[in-house]
Image 1 (tube, helix red, strand yellow):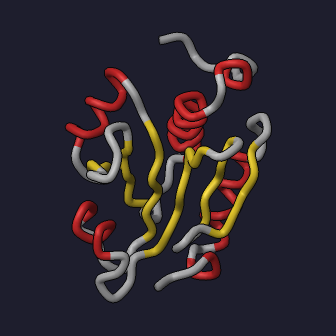
Image 2 (cartoon, rainbow, N blue to C red):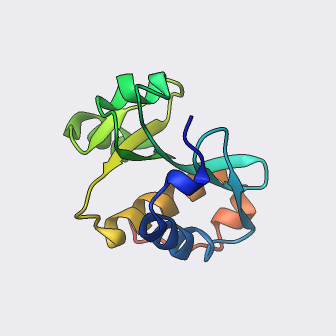
Length: 136
């Protein structure tokens, strides 16, 4: 299995900069990789696949030996992301779960929007209402 140390430091730094600005977020080592939670709800999970493991992530993404970000989406955004294809993929372990392969050309502004939306899907309404989101 891979652990938090396997996630590239630049990726962790970029994700931390996005996630920790959101209300009541905390970072934890996950069963593999690192996750960010609001209260007891995970809204972002980053991990590295290696040697065919974790098998479910390798199957869903088609990537073995890559860095993956898993998050939540809803409505039209969920449908669009699932239909877009690479770097996005459908994560079959949740109705609103989407994955993304993080390559060398990470668009941190896009990741920021996706994770802000993911946070708002998982956060209590009172906390989600504190977050500035673009209209639509």
